[in-house]
Length: 227
Image (tube, rainbow, N blue to C red; front, top):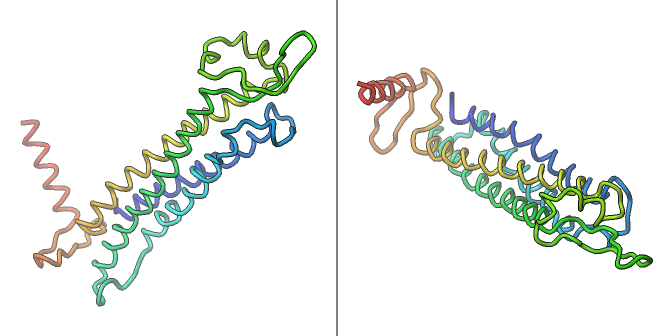
């Protein structure tokens, strides 16, 4: 598969992940599925980890990856190979942006899971107030405390934990996909956009290679190790 085609596959994978993260972050503004005042929303929700980190900052790399396969720029001084390699090199920068954005979402989600949601707690038999009863993650293994510590909104703990867990997992997957594109972009920059049967020019050595010869060399290498 061409490095540009592989990058397009990564871009297609990143788009739905970004949409899911944005939706999760939006749903977190409605704890337990209920509409509450802004001051009663968990602090980490306002960091917009899913909207900015895994959402907006992930859209740019995804769009760049999607366009690499059809990149037909004329290149440097009419050298198309040079232009394609520069495009693959620039994709590494956008992949790094994606890693930063997804990493931000992962950190925010991990902190939010550890601190727990903001909810109505009972101070005594008569007084109630909004607070964060869980501060060190001890509630994760104590499900009985979910309903006793948080009185309202109903189901706010499971709502909070489920959505931030999805953001955490999606962020890790996004980081992995962007890291793969860093390697793919580096290979595409050094070796060219390899497509089956199409020769690739190395400007420095004036030597042409084809994907078939490269695959044959790799096969021989593996056969030597197996032998």
